Image: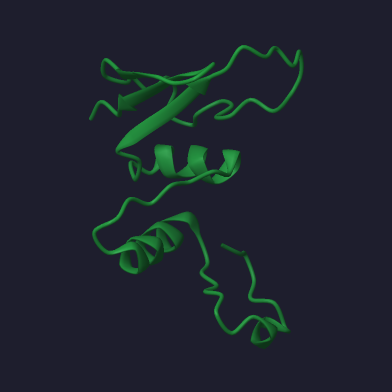
Amino acid sequence: MTHSLPSDAGKWPRATFVNGVGAAVDRAKEIAGDKNVCIASTTVARQALELGLVDEVWVSLAPVIFGEGIRYFGALAGGHQLLEDPTVIQGKRAVHLRYPVRR
């Protein structure tokens, strides 16, 4: 996803450049077909959540406390986003939580 197409975009013939989160999610879904699309960027994930493009939020809890870092979603433009009860998956030294987004 980009705000402006790079002048040397031809250097990456297998890359797809799109403008905006909505276009990026649409294109990713086309490419993925029947598979899931995952968003790993904090800023893009927040924007997609605000646009109603996220079906599920996955959170993994691991026994490490960093004490600093980037807030994953930050302040959402529409305020709080409620999530449904999670599916809990016990991993090895981690707990994985899958929260459906409440509509």
